[in-house]
Length: 141
Length: 131
Image (tube, rainbow over all chains, first blue to last red):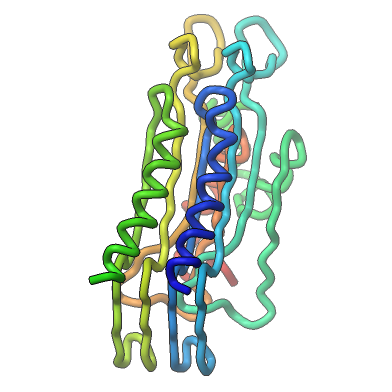
């Protein structure tokens, strides 16, 4: 049973990465939690907790170039002004101490203006701080 | 012993998968926690905890050049370039325990959202991120 869990999770990881080899090297991030067997008891687990196999796997793959090897960038309003595609992927929450009651986890993938808007709304960034960073050129317009 | 082998096999699979990705120059970061067997009990764990296999693996690969060997950056004006903005926040590693509401969002952001998220989250208190 343990070997089966490892094989399944390993295969999922490998399958997730097969997309990497198609067009150069993309940006990749992943988190795999609790592969194999985990058992927990006590207040933090609110009773008992047993996982056989794997508990969670999250992956995100963002390409950075076309099939011709050209960079994936956008014009930013003028000559020699470029910007990247906006991508935002919120995959889950890593909370070893448990989450508070009523806390939900929104699993989000956003691209373009939606990614900008979601990041601004959910990051808790102060509007004045953000404006100052844009004015200073730290963050692109 | 067999469990350690088991963990090593799974780790090897992850490494092989990552190797497939890294055909060009890339920045790679990873963390694998609790490979093999881990058993603990006491006040910190508030009961007991047993892990066979491995408990968590996080990794990120960020390329720095394309297939033509060109630097992956954006033009930000005459004679001025800017690197890609990438933010990957995948886990939290703590030995002292966390507050009840503590936790982090598992995020991959590229471009302006990466900047905004970094600006917003870096200024927040650790214990307030998931509540």
